[in-house]
Length: 158
Image (cartoon, rainbow, N blue to C red; front, side, top):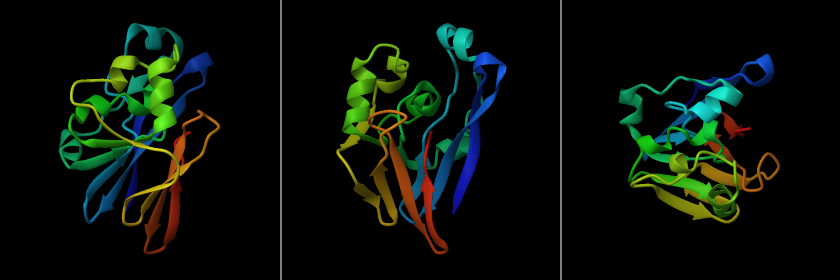
């Protein structure tokens, strides 16, 4: 079962955009695709006017692994809730987030206990859950292909 959760809204230029994260119920545990935002910083408030909607603690406690489609602030701002939990990301995405100025909020990427699993291309993370590189929005962007009993579902991030 895949569920969408409103994780934030951002409002640049007076147009509000929703940010969704997804949970996947899997026999090996709950998979979280992107983590949204749990708070903000003044620099983001000034330009993006975000409103975070953190996931409920009882849901956070069940997460067995995280997949980041990319590491922009509105998709990785909750990563800090998951020290020691494997976070799957494309190697290019992590390298760019760590090296490019104004790419993201660096302390939301590299935090105590961050446990990144880096991939270079397609990868199966669990049976029925596959990572697919989809460069465009960012050079290291990835989508998530989920096999369900009713067919395949693609979770695309941005």
